[in-house]
Length: 467
Image 1 (tube, rainbow, N blue to C red):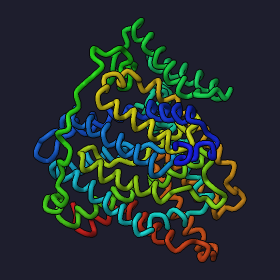
Image 2: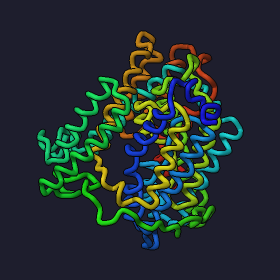
Image 3: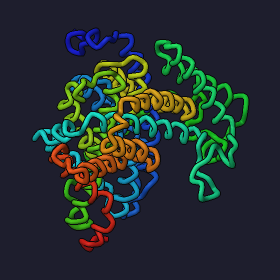
């Protein structure tokens, strides 16, 4: 039954590889069960109200569980979903500062519904198909550089400098600080060796081994916790006092669909929906392309198998995230960790989703894995994704320059959406300047125009008289 539904052998995989890959994906993104509640419960809405940490943790794990399993069963790709980083920051620090939490979550539900309509009408698939193959490859390369940077930053290997104009530096003052960064370096070396030797489950083995090493270090040395510069970034690798914690479902359904219209006005609310929607829309496109490319599932025309179902599940995840007060849920680029460990089908996503179900009750146990043990996987996977740079036609400057902007701006601006937007705009402009405007799909012109508005949102708001 599994073979017939997921086509496991047809994609060159095995049940063992799918289980291993699904677990690897989970362990690289399990941090969201802790980090999302920290972000959302750490902010107050316009009334001064705060969300319960445990309730947000429950919503985070529950929605990730349901939507990731749904992605596996319907989308049949090894893509996991959870609350989107960046998007949850917008909800916590932009939306909630202007309205109540239910109103803010209503904005998230609205943007998810709009994207769902775009999927059902075929518009989202049309946009996906209109992007040239080289730009899709550039998106994958950019995501590789982006997640590698995330891994380096999360581990404290790269930090914001205290001495401008240099924006970032190694460690602090050019020196690596603390035992946690040493744990990261050791974990990265171990993982690189395992992957280079093509050891099955190398990434998952690396995460587990590095976590054990971190626990030993934490036992031998008095390592401080965040926010100390030489301490653990988030999770402290030590055995918890208890393993099981009761979930809190109190935030489910705690949203107001149109409350934001009354709170900030119709124009402001629509702009907020538009901003969230554009970021969510193209983050997903980049992630799906990146994961499918890494899995070798993109055909010569740049098509991803079963992409309509994948995009539909992702759209519904945004709705579900808002409805559960866990912020917009979206496809996770950390899924490439599972792909690098052998995952090729939706069975891996089912495994990841089941592990999120366990996280509902075992949150203290999953908090044992520190960033410094999981982030080496992001650097290694970043390398694997970046190898696609070889397929970009560098002699064709009208295409190569937009590709370059696409992948270089993702890490430099810390945003997948910004890189995609810059690539689309520059591609349209260069083709027009070369007198080859007809080579560009009409939809790309429309999207490029929307991205112009996206990048110029501040002046647009001023023009419309929106505060």
